Image 1 (cartoon, helix red, strand yellow):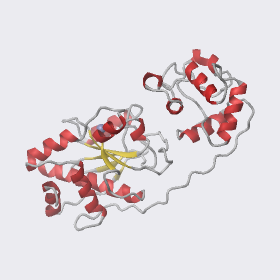
Image 2 (tube, protein in one colour; image 1 turned 180 degrees about the vertical axis):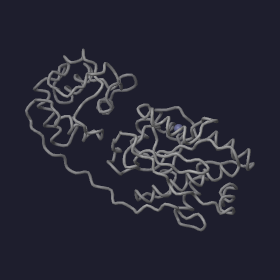
Image 3 (cartoon, rainbow, N blue to C red; image 1 turned 60 degrees about the vertical axis):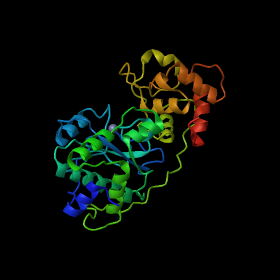
Image 4 (cartoon, helix red, strand yellow; image 1 turned 90 degrees about the vertical axis):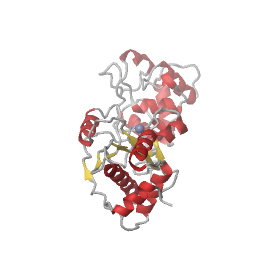
Length: 325
Ligand SMILES: [Zn+2]
């Protein structure tokens, strides 16, 4: 049984527009936890800004991608891609980001635009699910609110309020994630008249390649950091960015520390801290005494705060076995 709004979309014969590609301005390419091109589903967002436009939202996000970004935006007329869905986005907290593609609904202001926006969002979701060999279900299509409840890393509850208010105002009904999944499934199954407008060919996800071995010489250079980044699933540039220079005494043999900026931290170090069991404020992306001591401990050196030649050598052996520590 279709929700009243889904039925309205079908009865009206609305068609989704072709997707517009505006990707390329976000230079962040971190793989999902299962690897590049291996998302596990899609998170549904809503901007919560009653007066913004899709163009304004996108240019703001492109200018502030270091704070947060999603893959896609929709409104009543547009489906616009802004980040490559092969790589993760930063819109819903560490754990959700490492698993899901993410799209934003911009607030729209009429009955038909709201219906079309749902159709456009559902079209996008149906297409990416096909592309990554996933199927519509309540585990592959989730709201930001649901990921907040699952992982407790954000407190956002979108798009619940926006859907509830709009569905009530224009259709005297409700709209919930189950209704959206129903619509995605309808499109995914190719039912007339809502066939996907931009069918993507299914891709076979690339298998993670075995990492190349690095020299075990106790010198933490580019190759060592690149391999560690590869295992951690973060950008493999061989450099640890945003480090606090006075911490240098804790990493005498890690040469690839970018201390140009006194703060900011590194996503690789955050990932390392997570895996070392750090929580809350300790996830600051700074390689300091705590990180060196914890990593040393994992490598068999107790109560040692300097990551020296012996430590790097032990770390290189671990990295060569495909483990972060
Ligand atoms: Zn959100």
